[in-house]
Length: 185
Ligand SMILES: CC(C)(COP(=O)(O)OP(=O)(O)OC[C@H]1O[C@@H](n2cnc3c(N)ncnc32)[C@H](O)[C@@H]1OP(=O)(O)O)[C@@H](O)C(=O)NCCC(=O)NCCS
Image (cartoon, rainbow, N blue to C red; front, side):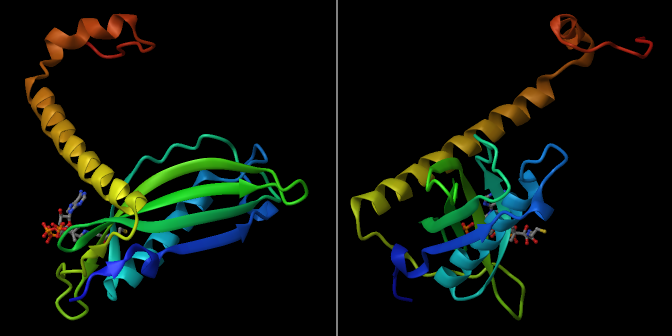
């Protein structure tokens, strides 16, 4: 299988934020943006893989600024990293005030997508990624680091959960904004 350049699958969606997308506070629902992110991640990863793909994990979803009704939202997606069957798609979301042309960066997130075989439904190998620029290489290396740190964090947290003794830890709650509403034995 020939390596595919990052540019082969780079994908951009642009959508006008209509009033039907607003929450009770008049801003755009976070779920609308998440749904668009999932779609652009699908399109980008499916293009690289040339197969059906599924979303496996989402990282770095922080809404840095609200999106307003009437703004033009653009989602810029590219494959940052490729494993055997998995691909990390980086998505940068910007919102533009159409009247003034002012742009704001609302978030950057990373979707891990896995390619599936149409008949068996099992993960299937995807083409390697051809890194054509130093920026492509930087993103690939950053993804490797992010994956390594995520795995280390998961191991640490799993160990902490095993070590957590409820009785011994209850005093940590004294300075928190909660009340214990059950009888402790
Ligand atoms: C993710 C899934 C494909 C893993 O299947 P599996 O049989 O365990 O396969 P593997 O262990 O070989 O994992 C396949 C790849 O997914 C990656 N992966 C699995 N879980 C992951 C996670 N939580 N985060 C990141 N990558 C993950 C593996 O590292 C592997 O990558 P690689 O092939 O590049 O090395 C399977 O659990 C699945 O289909 N999940 C449901 C996905 C879905 O339906 N999404 C839509 C949600 S509505």
